[in-house]
Amino acid sequence: MANTRSRISTDIDFERAGKQEGFLRLPHSVHRSAYGYIPIPIVTVRNGKGPRVLLSAGNHGDEYEGQIALTKLARTLEPEAVSGQVIILPMANFPAAQAGTRTSPIDGGNLNRIFPGNPDGGPTEIIAHYIESVLMSQVDVAVDLHSGGSSLLYIPGTLARRHADPAKLDTVLGLVRAFGAPMSYLMGPGGEDRSILAAAERAGITAISAELGGAGMVTRETLALTERGVLNVLRHLGVLAGKPEPHPVRILEVVRARHYVYSPDGGLFEPRAELGDAAKTGQLAGLVHFPDTPWREPTPVHFVGDGLVVCKRVPTRVERGDCLYHLAGDLGL
Ligand SMILES: [Zn+2]
Image (cartoon, rainbow, N blue to C red; front, side, top):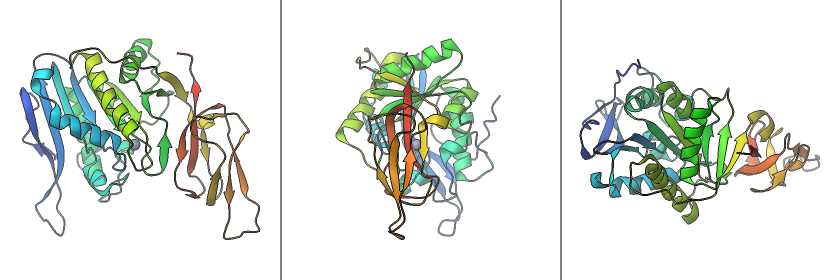
C-alpha cells in the first residue's frame, strides 16, 4: 500500500462528479512569503462509470506542447462528454514550468528523475511522491506529455516501456496506436526507474509518455498532433465517445548503449546528420570544432549503431558528455 500521506493539500475532491478547478497547495516558506504555498493547477472532470485517466505535462518545465494542449483541454472538457474521469495536471513541476526550465529553480529537482519522491523532501520530491502515491492510486491510466525541451528536438512520437509481459505490451501499444503520433519509441527493460513511467509501473497502472517536438518552441503541427493524440487516447479508452482517428504509427525501439551519441569534447558541433536520416554504425555524425584553438583538428563523432535519427541536439555549443543525437531501431511490430 502506497504511503498517501503528503504535505500537499487541495480543495479538489477527486471522488466528486462534475468539473472542479483548483490547486494542489505545496507549503513553501521563503523570505518573501513565510506562510505561502506553491499553487499547482489541477482540473478534474468526472462523470458516471468509466476509466480514470491522469493527463500531465510540465514534468519538464521547458516542454510546451503538452502544457498548451492540456490547458486547452482543461478549458473545454465538460462532464457531459466524459464517461469516467480525467484529471489534468498541465504544470506538474510547477516551479520549473513557471520558469520555463527543465528542472526546478527552487531545488534543482528534475521531476522525471526523482520518482518515487519523498513526502518529506524538497518541493520536487514532494510533487513526485504526490503523483505516484496519491494521484496514481486513484487512476487506471496515465499519459505524461514531454518533448525535447530546450536542448533537443524530436521527430514527434509517443514513448513507452517495452514490457516483457505480452498482455501489458499489448495494452500499451493500444494507447500508442490510438495516440497516432508518427513514431513510437519503446524503451527496453532495465531502463530508468526514477521516471513517471517507472512510477506508473510501481502503481500498477498503464502509462505512456511522449516526445512531441522540442527546441523550446511549439509549432502548429506538433501542437495539433498533441491535441489530437490526447483526444484519441481518451476515445480509445471509452472516456470520450467515438473512435480514434486512424494514423500510421512506426514502432521503434531505443537502446541507449547503441543509439545515443555523445560529444567527446567541448566546442562547437557541426552536425552531419539530420532528423529522419538513416544512420549506420561508424558513420560520421559530426565534428566538434575548437575556435579557441583554431589550428587544432576537429574531433570527429561517429554513430555507434544503426537506426533512424529521431532526436538531435539544438544548441551548437557542446560540452563533453552532451547527447548530440539519438537513434531508434525498427522492431518489426
Ligand atoms: Zn521531458
